[in-house]
Image (cartoon, rainbow, N blue to C red):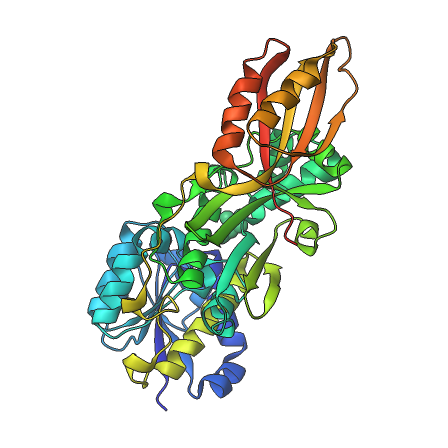
Length: 436
Ligand code: HSE
């Protein structure tokens, strides 16, 4: 078979990793793909840097359009990120009949429906293993390995930066802002870490996994997104004392009335495997009706781990190039005319358990008033602890874990509890999942 020519857009960290892995493992890759996969062109606006990295082994240009329009290029690898220029280039490549491999989760979560429709029209593939979980083959697993199953839920630690921060807060008893600074110093967190710490990056990845898992369109706008910035070291410690760890999870759950799509800090029993995923590592739990729970673990970012996913896509595309488009694995796992319009549930209808922490005056009858509010709304308490008074204060922390409850009732209880004169300040609410 004739070699497959690849054009790379963006030779940053992952682009460089992809170039290196393709070169280093070229023989093994050719034996697997049935043909050589060659990086023919590289586009990067920093021409000098690109030329230095490529060292004459590919044509280098500062103009990405040259790559997407070049007749010799079979597959365009988009690793420039962002949603404006990357979208234009991908759509142009598709229009030119080229297959696309991308790691761009923000783009797919927001414009995936349009991109896949364009790709279907032109009978080309758009592969995106590297968009979720870095080197973990979660897309392949959800789309192909678990294809016999009705997926019931997906829950993942899919942002390494926030997992690093939460692990640091727990290990060192440190504040959020101090561990964030350390993450920035080590290069894990960007100078502007908003997307990672506010849950946006995780919401992009959850959108993609939910689409493949449930056969629904990409619906990034419907994901409830709450980051880790408000978590205190006290909450992490109290959770630990009760036998839980706090992780930022992306959760997609199929319920009778619709689908829950949510990213938020979550208490998980410390004995669960996923609760022990530390530092920048990622892990995703998938529950299928036939297989039960499965877990996928690995590096969620980094040059070569992410390149591993990009190159796997290149091999996949190379193998399928000559196949009849009708018989390829559909982009979103389900046939495009079989996507479901099942509703995404509003947060008020989500059902989960809760960790509630409140500051109260240590006086007789205080607890009775609080538990009465909870009982009236049908909220059942699973565990409750009163902590030592803060030094020099007559206020104490009360921590409660609830059984499963629909969120709108918990919201109503919180509003009533906050209005009690014996309660100081706001109630802290963190959702809890048992995964049993
Ligand atoms: N910023 C992401 C993370 C890595 O912290 O996990 C790329 O998806």
